[in-house]
Image (tube, rainbow, N blue to C red; front, side):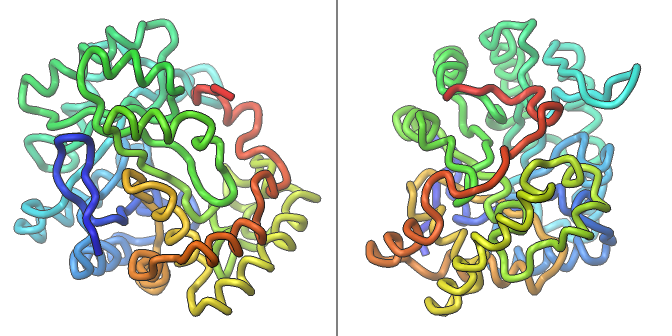
Length: 333
């Protein structure tokens, strides 16, 4: 297994990370004990990148990680902790607003550090761009956090390649986080290429398609109980049934190749570029072990061709976000 760099001059990390949104109830009920078990399994496997955000469970995810580090002080030596800020709940109704002001980011960073119980985060992202503030100005704010010793590297989530170039010209950007998987391939239209050119890691969230690319995708009934998925086009009928039918063929192929479907999805992503780092979220050690299969298996050109024939570009029914969920991410294609 070959480690991957987190940014051009950053630390070497395991090819797989952990997305800690799953440490809240976002995809279903979970407990601190279950999250600790996943972190224990990650440590045992050498997984070192843990990704969270201030808004995940309104601080709950960061608190869980902080409690784990408190119970396991030596873990901080190997774990690379990443968190994000820039999203606020809309005060006058549902939805979010975005704030990239220096005062807001400073306040949120200090609160995140307190919840995590650490002196500095290894990577600090702007979760969503505030279009009222030039990205150059926001990058200067982040660079100030680096100089102050509170942040070791900076990143952005869901930005366009052009925005990445503007930010990187001000201060090196270590990583851009974007949804990327067999079901969402928009990063191939410029972002993955720009990251490779600049030496920026592409941290891929939702790499197993919010369960569609697993052996046991969420049932339609289960999706209806989750606030995010109930309004997500890919989990609404008739799209949901069409997507299950399409991915049934992928599940069959994964079995034929001796992999779990999640393992196949991770292996495919890792084969796309050496600077891609998937960060799947999981609430169970059993599912984590399935994800690890993808790291241990290097797909052949013939197998990659089979996968692309089974799930060709554009196979998914429905957009990845609803109109409301599209607030914030930059569209560039």
